[in-house]
Length: 489
Image (cartoon, rainbow, N blue to C red; front, side, top):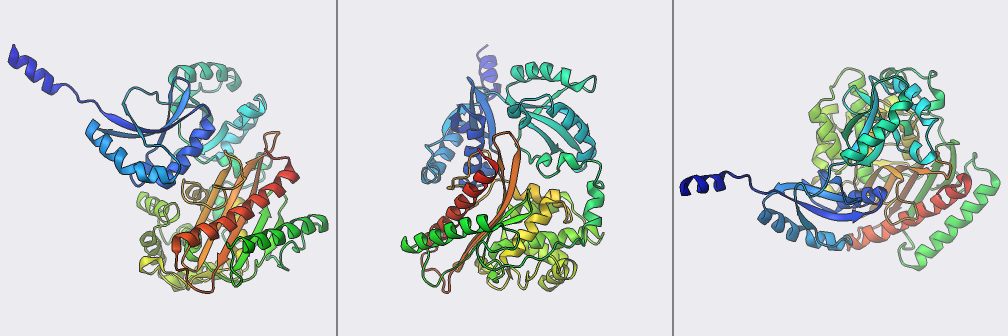
């Protein structure tokens, strides 16, 4: 009997533990915390953070599935990084003491366009708050779903599914799927244009050589498409802002700044300071490397496999230099990448130059672009006019570093598609922000902020803080302008 008991005790499954970082009453705040934690923590924790539920609150959890000792060791290891980012040390919870959360899958299709009728029919019956939860998402390489993001435990999700069943009008019943924050394609595809566009698979090929008109830049606020009143207002604000930044020491006398903003709804420039001056690109060249690669994929010269997908995420989300060089080699080297960009897209991008692999230590100073080239890239990307636009948007939306959202006046819940760039000479960010108006409409706009020094910074960390602070201040200024124009939240 003693032997039997001892054997049973040894065979009993050991408890497994998870680390929980925050609890919030609002899921939007939990999502914001998860994004910030993803920037703070090291792999693999930063890539496996889950939103879970407990007693009506939403938590951000790393499902370590380790022993109590392992959980304690990791919690101690992470404590300094968490403290630096404004978080308290992680709590340790046994698995099973929190609930998995679910979304509802209302319909499935082989292309986003096939789901647009269902989206429009169901959205018309929803309140503005619930309408924002309805998204078309890519769930696989060639599969899409209409998803209602309810962030509910299983019991509550089943209850919501019963309510949604009546809205499907005899179509397939809602099914529960794991709650994840996937990029919503409905943001990038205007439902009003359904039926006017070719399938996405054809768009990339037919629009691959599409040309967007070049923009002429005459300094801040003087773009030909900006109305005189708006130009005068934002021009004076930018000039006052720059004067303040120099007074505070964030900008030195010889530092050069580029500040460009573009309203993607009305296709007009909001601000255009030094948009036609060439700047070092730093890591902001990486989306152009991705474009050169996807151009070759669409032409049938290269393939996009699961390995390529992983490396693409490393290059864009984590700004991995080796992954970047890997893609440059795939295309055929820097000169070949440069030839693809300038040969196929030379009338869209005025002066993108891919001249070197990323050197050891990330000291890349030869690659360059105009700020207006980033705007044209983002504009074409948003309008599905580049090869694999949706995939590039997906990767650019993954949690990572940014200087146009965190630490700005832009409100929580704003979608961010961006790529930063930093060297000891340059601090920059280029991206799309998708804000919300008070009537529930999504309002996208592009922001490009760059600060370049004439000499290398001696204190790299302080340089990132001061340069990033200038860009964040500019992004806040642009948001306030958009808020007035569109009655944003």
